[in-house]
Image (cartoon, rainbow, N blue to C red; front, side, top):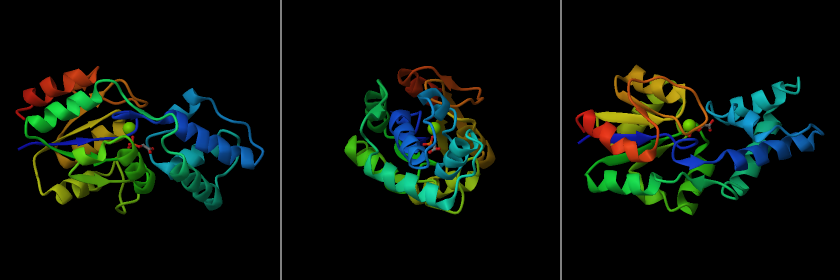
Length: 209
Ligand SMILES: O=C(O)COP(=O)(O)O
Ligand SMILES: [Mg+2]
């Protein structure tokens, strides 16, 4: 059986509005102006620490550990205000599960808010394993992050689906096929590209799933 591993932000869910709101509250506490949603979208993908570094760097400032702690605490409290599952994702997950695939989740988002979001949006039951950006010493693009997700699922053969080059690099580094999705926040390259969730099943089938 081929395991299907999903990225979270920009792949399953549109989480940028809540991420932006939390970042902007942390900036406001230091009297710094908010960033636009578009600007924040471009800062997402490498986990919370880099997100805060980028948000402060854009103001010519250096993010301190207290800023990261404030962001994680704020976001943990407000992770699903505007966050929504992308249209077509729930049916696609259902079809994949019906087809006998084992589903996993590998996100650079901290595991606390990630689990809270999965529970709030009723996504948690789909996933046999969930690893966050702080679940292991590694995070995407390091393939060991993806390897940890697969190890928890006790499967070797897999496909990784994500919206960022980090997802494609983690897959490549582990020798598994990546499927790049175009509806998210990042840029990435793969010979397999999905333009809508409905295309995922066909692409996975093509891979011999
Ligand atoms: O939190 C991030 O920076 C990105 O999260 P993702 O890996 O689910 O896209
Ligand atoms: Mg993503």
